[in-house]
Length: 329
Image (cartoon, rainbow, N blue to C red; front, side, top):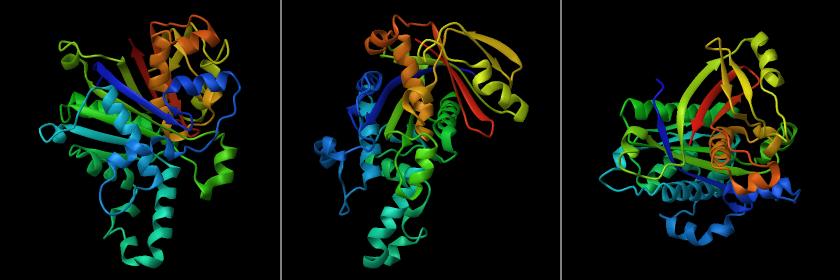
């Protein structure tokens, strides 16, 4: 089901504010980065989004701002006329548990009847994405993927499938990486360094290009597969290697699912740059790949003139579940 998909807009929120540039620059210059996002920096916009008698939870606020910025960057406004043709595909993991925990702590004593999933949706795994749909008036498909590191990548595949089958016109993919007190030790052991929330807006290229709309990048190929133990050993640090400070050139990567070899210009190791970004990694790979394709000034300052013709981003977990995406300008 390979069909060109247009990446119309992206957004990335960290403790440093909006955008990946400032995050990359701080990392490369060795600056201290606060690991937790302070929602106060977006308070004006949060106040404008706030609806209903209950204040949004911290996770809701950050994901709502990320979605808002992505739609603005894609120049898309959700209206009654297109609401049913806009979908949200959400990749999350630990933050859902913190969301549930915060909810239970708040209502356990004051309104215990609200802590039942059958009555109140905030206790379900899709609580955050459902709340976003309600907040923005989005009435299309809403799916949450909670498969760890590959969650957002699988959400991208689902978004691609919806677009190709013409079941939606706009697919908003959101990936999250939030700190959770309940998993403090585990998160740091796995390489957690700082929170982030990222989103990308996808549309069919065949409809966007003739209209002359701005395109961040294009998804050319997208695959999902599962490798056995022998393939995992050969894949991890084997066929994909990094050179020149985490950004390499002239890579040849073996797609073990297809049993073929594909030559690509550049391969990026997110982990060596940002630490473990968990379920946000699928979207972050798209954003970082786009920056490389356009010869981003921050990247040029630290790594020289890196401007490949295409990017292959591979996202996989320790169990062999993996996705690969090729993007071009």
